[in-house]
Length: 278
Image (tube, rainbow, N blue to C red; front, side, top):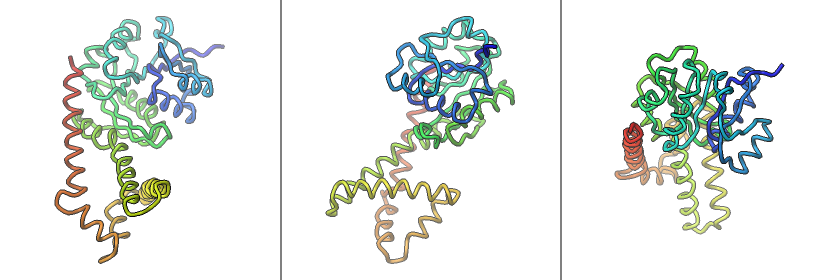
């Protein structure tokens, strides 16, 4: 007997495929039912991964398929959500759960598109591609506990997932974890350049920088993320690390710059959210 479709993923970009990969690896597809990915112009990389995962990529969702869905995950660029959402709203069941990973698209905008359907707005991040993502979501007020649990299960297939109950928190989430990987990559990049300036060969400097950042991240993870304590452990009074900390933690240093950077990203996220409402 052919299993009826129940889950659709709209968008075969990096985040969409990261989610699909996580669902397959965690066995959620078999539990949820048949999955199809909808993308009118999938990349070759998307086609290759879909073939490996044995998932179909189709150019559009038919009315017959849509009528059987209970969950739709939308992973398109924010500017594409309106036309995609308008088309979906015409064919989806009234009780279908809509989960959006489109950055900055507010619940108000989603409600304007999808009406009274259960709605989830989420903010994942880049490490979801390797199952080490950090995702936070917020649900529309009338979304049931069952729908929230479904969102937690699906979004959690790529790493940690947390729910917040005030939508404005997603602006800070976007600034911390959504944009956060870029801050870490910049740290490794700057550390590489600094090492080269001190006489290291470029290849060695980059290897040391990248492995140090990656290793420190894994150590924080294993030690249940207590960065202040770990920093203190590696900083001996009067030592080389202390000399560096005097610069990084001084006036105008790393901590102050990070506060300014996150504040700037938070404000930009809020502005994008306002723009997406129109």
